[in-house]
Image 1 (cartoon, one colour):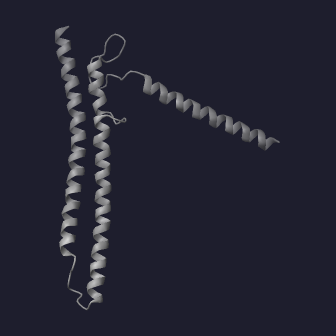
Image 2 (tube, one colour):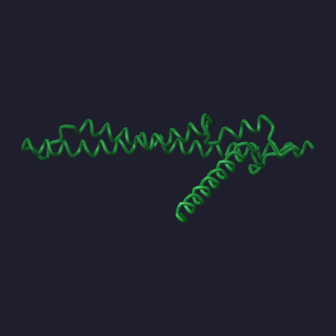
Length: 156
């Protein structure tokens, strides 16, 4: 009997913890953005519409510019991984085929191998460029908001 009430109590605690976590997430999502980027907030502590739109560009929430950049960057990492696997497989099969034909030094798939190597390097460059783009986006938005704050401060 004691174990069932203990089990019920732990389920109740788990439900309470889950409810608290959901509430905390809801409060964070519904609350206005803070002014940590140096942007000037109005009397209620909210950004104006344009500042909010600017901040949302760098967010990684769905359908934002930052989200699309980060998702593309992650996809390019998967492409690099998959192409590398394909390249290793191609090399092993080419080596085994050449060996089975009595010409272990021959490579029949060399042109394909070179194309895969070039594609892998292109995907690596794409990943680096996308990540750099995301970091630049964040930096530019922060700088823009700081400059906006300074200009509004002089106008007041």
